[in-house]
Amino acid sequence: MEKTFSKRALEEKDIVKKVKQTIKKYEMLKDGDTIIVGVSGGPDSMALLNILWNICKEGKINFTIVVAHFNHALRKEADEETKYVEQYCKKRNISCYIKKQNVEQYAKEQRIGIEEAGRKLRYAFFEEVAKKQKAPIKIATAHQANDNAETVFMNILRGTGTAGLKGIEPKRNLLIRPLIHIQRNEIEAYCQREQLNPKIDTSNFENQYTRNRVRNMLFPFINQNFDANIVMACNRMADICREENDYLEKVAKKSLSEMKENLGKQELEEKNLLVLSLKKFNLQEEVIQKRIIMLAIQKVLGNSQEITKINIEDIVHMCQKQIGNKYMMPNSHIKISIQKQKIFFEKIK
Image (cartoon, rainbow, N blue to C red; front, side):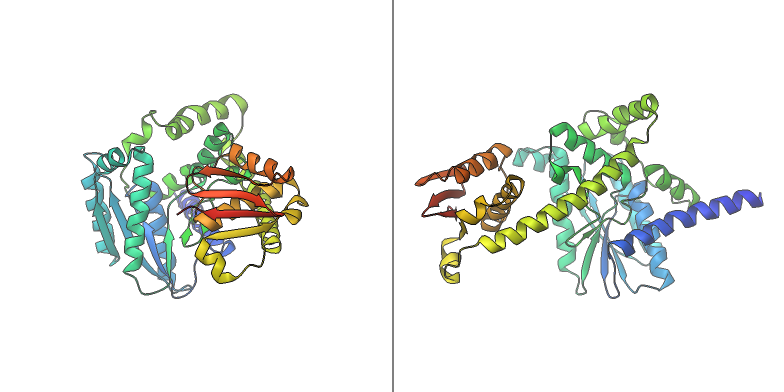
């Protein structure tokens, strides 16, 4: 009996230790932060909330936890999950914000998939909660190692580049993912040991979505027939790709800064214009040229939606051939042209 208890205590300490290491490695938390934790009531988010709550109680980092629970109104069990999260927070004196919205209806109105609709509405809700807080904000989501592996594999199927192969980033702007190096089986074991009794979303077992088919069908097949831990293999690849992608992005940003034409700042802002030196652009390796174009488009438009690989390649070709008095419009919002040895990125109003 004593040996069993010691093993369980060791396992519990191990998962908490790994989360602390992740928080420290990526500098996710600091004194004075308010952490908005996205909590669905499932194993991942309940484990995240419970671990953060216990770290908070230790007092080594002085931060405040706020829970944001979004009810998608998609399943009959959703209201029970809301009550469960409310009760957990009430028992521990944790502020809890709740919002219920019909995701299916929103998806139809916006003509997008339910998964995308749910993600958009969730993050919009997180931003609503963030605006109500006065202290420095971080938003913690419960993405873990299996989620990351599934994302990487789905991006492989789509034929993505290194930006897609880096998977889910541990930290991005205000977003932090403290569980990103923890596997699903570790989380389930932790929930059982802590007697959290999380709610199970039964839709995760339905294989109508690509992610569920990867999780429930493809990964078990690979593990069984190739004797490999596909989750950890994908996570190792994601770490490597993240490092390489971050380096290339750093090089591209530096190059972009060096090739900007120094027109009047007011003129550039008024015209929503970015102008680059064609000569300096053509001195770059093509892999950097592609990234520079994407960065330039993002700078002018604020995003790179609807910009495809073919669009980028066509623009690179136009610049390399130095085709003057010609322009391209990869979408209806931006015009890219070459004039007098300069590349013009102009926002269309």
